[in-house]
Length: 317
Ligand code: FAD
Image (cartoon, rainbow, N blue to C red; front, side, top):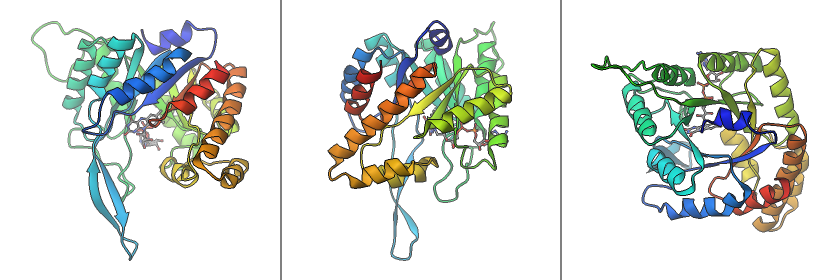
């Protein structure tokens, strides 16, 4: 079923979460055990991220970043099909611009279509960590909107190659990303929302937000989107803090702010178990306020952890 139909058919706030494919050489069982822990809370759908190879850097004594290894997380398409078949829960594989040319993207979309997957989340992929710039592969897309257009075209039976026979249209529901605190490369919120609206006009049916730790960012963002004429559902993305290191790494990687009150409480914690508990309580409070505001779904970034998300879901759904 398409995510937009799932959202439209529901009168209450739904539960969904995002999984990362295991690192190359790791086992699919870890993914299944995460889903097993969260399945009792009736996830409406499950997102699976897509990754190009990720370079891991170290910094030498002169402060220069040096690449030390490559990490790869292949398997999004296979994993998505395996999950949908094993659990009967709709999956939302992500597709990205980075590392792919448009023909490779078309092939991945055809695979997904053959596998009975009717949802995708179209995102650009991150900028290079050193240059801070996003570089498309030759023949690839520079912005998520180009992916949205490609999928929307496939939904009309318009393939990149001229086909001999009557082409079969695909039937994908397209989601896109939005940024309550603005995308880091965007000069301002108005510009970011302007381009977000273009993604919706190009064929996206709903928006999932970047994580935020203060609901006021989400409410303000939704208001601005509505004022700009964006009418589609806007699903809040939530990430419970679980280790002290998150205080540094999450703002750095995702360009989000952690409220001072939460920072001070985390700093007082003596163990990571205490941090996890605090993160759960903070996310429960955020979730309850969002449910009260009747948001379409709460979307959780698991980052490989299920126990804390299960605790939140138990208290909220
Ligand atoms: P875009 O919509 O292309 O926007 C990127 C920037 O360009 C923004 O600043 C925007 O305002 C601007 N812009 C957009 N269109 C134009 C235009 N035509 N001209 C000029 N400027 C423009 N990354 C992964 O690698 N894999 C994943 O699976 C993944 N999943 C994600 C899921 C969610 C819910 C979110 C929020 C992010 C995810 N990301 C993922 C990270 C994402 O790839 C990055 O945040 C990336 O930097 C931007 O992606 P986007 O789709 O929002 O890009």
